[in-house]
Amino acid sequence: MHKDSTAQAKQKKDEREEVLKKIRQLENRQKILENKLRNEERRVRTRRLIERGAVLEGIFPLAPDLSGAEVKAFLIALSHLPGGAAELAAKLPKSGDKP
Image (cartoon, rainbow, N blue to C red; front, side, top):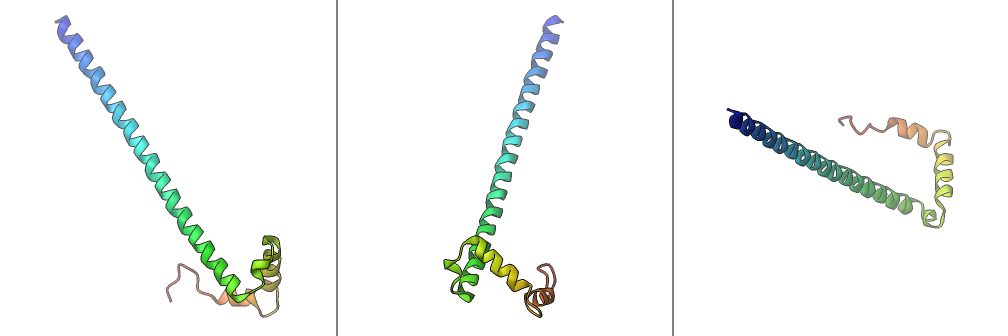
């Protein structure tokens, strides 16, 4: 009888270790998937920033010669022009809106 309870205890211990191993594997898999998602989001953002920077440089040829702070100041000043960018931006459809 003692051997049965010892065997059952060992079996339960082995089962517990197997479950804990599976949990660790799933946690690691979750971390891997979260990292892939973050990398994909970063890649999409980087592409968007590059594309928009190219548009900016195409419209304003002097933009490549300006510092980041100068470009920012220029765009802020542009957005404050009467009847300009602020009103135009308000008329643009939001990214979630259907045309």
